[in-house]
Image (cartoon, rainbow, N blue to C red):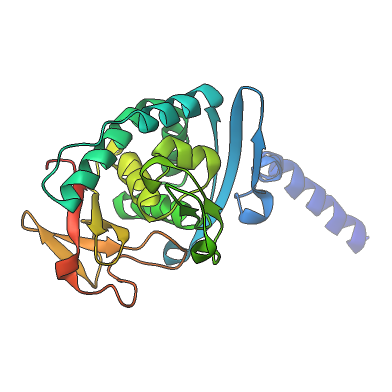
Length: 265
């Protein structure tokens, strides 16, 4: 008899709490990278990408899908190829003018990517710093490729090489479409995305180091440049693992780093 009474009580408890049990059963599981398989698919009208990446600092895993139509990619490439070399008095000024034109021209074609990032920010309740990290980590996670204005040579054998690209750069739309980008391809893309979300990113350039880095005025520690009275922390974007405030070995002489692109300048 005791066994039957116990079973009856179990059934009563289950009946009383059936709504809670049903809600738990129907609850959508938390997204993890094991359920977010990356893929890229080029179709007759557009290219689709699904990206998955991690941010160890926030113990976070992210997944993002976007689509760029082939016509937008063609227009972005055409704009870059038809650019007139800007008049400039210095190396940083020249590249800053090139970068600004690419960022401003491509902005109109990035609506779906921006919408996807906005949804990611809201669904994961990302604060100001966490969202900046998510965007940078997404770009860091894309494998590095040389982007060369001429033909690829044996000098570029340690990474894949994308040849005959005007200015040796892929514009923001070209980068997101092809997933091929080097240092300044990455910094200009991040600049374009974060500017839309009201951040104040800076693209740094060094003629001596032949390199470009991001700088961002967020809470961080380590190496920074003071620009207009604010601290902008160096942020390497060409590989995973780099946090703000860390400069790659052999590139830490700050006098060789100059501002190429900043919104107010």
